[in-house]
Length: 199
Ligand SMILES: Cc1cc2nc3c(=O)[nH]c(=O)nc-3n(C[C@H](O)[C@H](O)[C@H](O)COP(=O)(O)OP(=O)(O)OC[C@H]3O[C@@H](n4cnc5c(N)ncnc54)[C@H](O)[C@@H]3O)c2cc1C
Image (tube, rainbow, N blue to C red; front, side, top):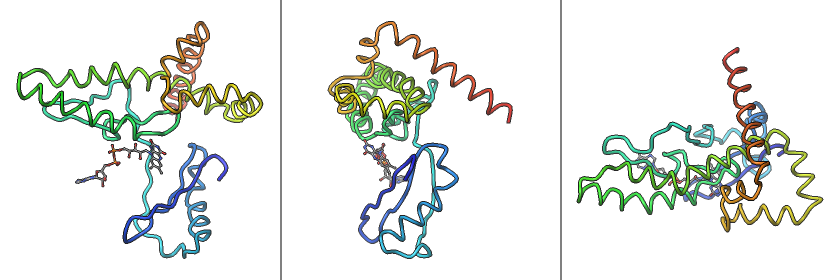
């Protein structure tokens, strides 16, 4: 699907068939879903449990700890904004949350330490990924063309997608270019918020 993709997942007694993509493909998702269902040899009328949602993405000020509640994974909005991947952050946050909870119960320390750990290991990367997301998804065609014509660049990007290095590492590598990219991203977000507010 232009601007998105589809999936079919076995769920024991039923199939989970779906489509997703960039914001602009939203209006045609229903039609694309029906095409995909037919493609797999099923009747569109047999569809049930239809639902849609955005990838859960935290806002800068979103809390992951409140009172005695700790959020992990998608509930905390830890999805990578550039790739849409959330399994790593879900597993990672689930691994560090119990230690924070145990410290809280044993020493009466604040659960805020969990949030601070995420700040160090995940949030800074999400922040960097948002900047890359804003620029990449503004001009995906240009970036795809560059990636195709420069295999070295593609291999360099794989280092980040595979988790061998972080987006924060990339931001350091980009040096003076990074503040320019950050400003461009902020500008895009301000314009988009302004447009949303004007609607
Ligand atoms: C189509 C699609 C493709 C994706 N592809 C990738 C990918 O390739 N790589 C990647 O890294 N990420 C991918 N993601 C994102 C990834 O699936 C999520 O980020 C990840 O699963 C989040 O894990 P989680 O444990 O936080 O939440 P979930 O995996 O959603 O787990 C939450 C669980 O809680 C259960 N639950 C909900 N409410 C209740 C309740 N009241 N009582 C008991 N149980 C409840 C749910 O049934 C669910 O099993 C994809 C997401 C989608 C939708």
